[in-house]
Length: 188
Image 1: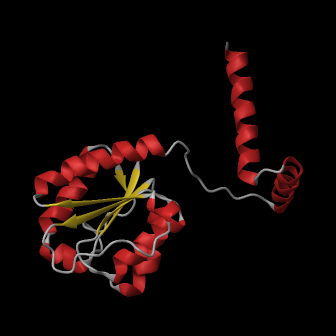
Image 2: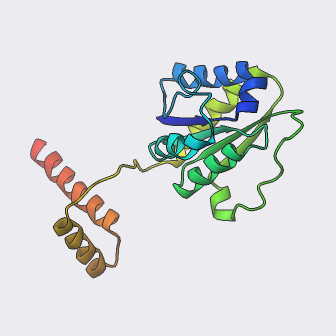
């Protein structure tokens, strides 16, 4: 899976070992990071917050955020993850003075995408991440990808979806499923 891991500059400065442990846990579990900011560009400022995080979040299967500090960047990344319907793990280190409060502004449907855990010791991070990744794999039954279509194909899919009272995505899925079934029958 591709995982987006995000944190704050204050979180990195105060809990660098935790951040590196999160990164190592993901890589050792054979997952890929959507953006390896800990090794490449951790000092970039707010000017690049949007461009540097939106693409990796869109391309990710799930998102892990260190929410130990009340930072604009964490709220922004959380909003992007919810917008793109990505499962989110909010990690909070116990005893952090500016620990975020309950996610009162997030609606009930979107809260189902979020798991929050507080840890006291870095050792607990590994187990929390493993549980979250298992949950993500079990709850994410569909793969996502982007597709570019010329206008003729797009219009055809719109028409087909309107006639069948479905969506363009469902129409594409049905076509691919039909093609797969035909392929498997020919192979048998």
